[in-house]
Image (cartoon, rainbow, N blue to C red; front, side, top):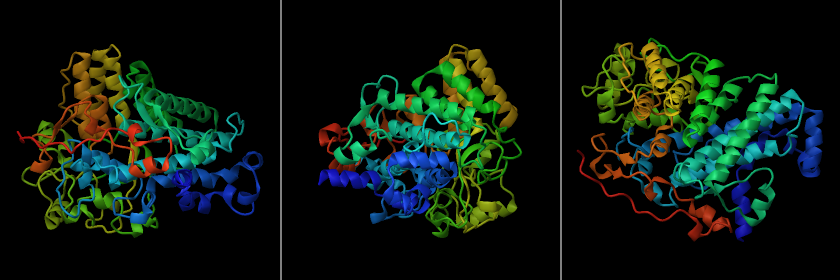
Length: 530
């Protein structure tokens, strides 16, 4: 019975995407040919793989993707992962009410391995890994066909991204924890064996080795292929460099992180200008600063649902959960650190519920909705329409601004703090605050200043929790504006900072027992908010 259940877990949701999209699995081919024959078919007609590659990207935005049997309004693809992780951190306080579907992440109730958040995180990413494996399984890694090179690169790069995200959630950060158990590695090489007999947890080092290997291969394929992506839902070589820059930064491979970030910058668009971010924005993948995105169509199920989507839970000026009380706020402590000369100060309402970035119509909408102090105004409504009920905004997965911040930190930590400080100051002066001065002189001080800039620039983009982990910051919410019962001060390395593998996986996977899972931890005890 355990074997059967594991098989279901490994492939239960393939019908949501591949069965309806994959030209290789439709009758009569799907029931009559072997994997070897599929490889031959693909080689003869590479275009047959396109639907399978599109299915990989579709998983980022899948309605009822993780838990259709108990569907909730927090289950809409990778946007759900982003919101869960940010809610667990220190810079996005939220109210504890019935409209906030991400309360259990904010309260750390997600430590219960039967609860929705950890199941959504786990299943969302492994479902996408499954779709990626279905492509890598039938494309010859030594292919000379440009189109197939591009398709295989998509599968490998997305799989690397997924395992990198999983590694940061289910174990402490890479450095110093290389030999600790991480997550099961399932690829095209062992998928059948894993579905039948289960799959044990690999070490952190093994997972990162796979991530780096997949990215190296993807970059080589993209560099040698002449195929250009149709839009930003697909991975370009610059995006692959960007993912590898993130990985190298986490591994503290400083020189490699700097080199990758620079390559990503060189081939990408320019950052948003001060003028461009002096109003609510961040809704269009076509914007020149966006490198990679979840592209949303008005006909997508997450949009036609009305409120089961990222803008519903994030947006303050459009219809959805946020606008009726599940506000996304910025930490008061962080807000106070932002200079008045920085255009990003207006990405949130101040203590008096005002923002210099809002025009009269936008301020009226914020007042009509009853937005409290410190409510986010970074993400505007779809097409700029106030009170918009069509929540079809795209979602950023990577912007070129992040690459400048990675470059500055990696330069400093790699032995050139003055260079890193100069990179940081030039970026902020040019694109956010002409008055900014980076006074940091040591490598550690530059890294700290970059972290401050990352907290502001990348707020709400699903990256903040990973920074807390890799920088060993812990969770200190004192003075941030969280409800009193959720003001925690959790030290770095504490067991509460990593998720437990879901009970459903433990029950279904014969090679992961209760003893193999991460330890049971209690919800943290609140501390005085000072």
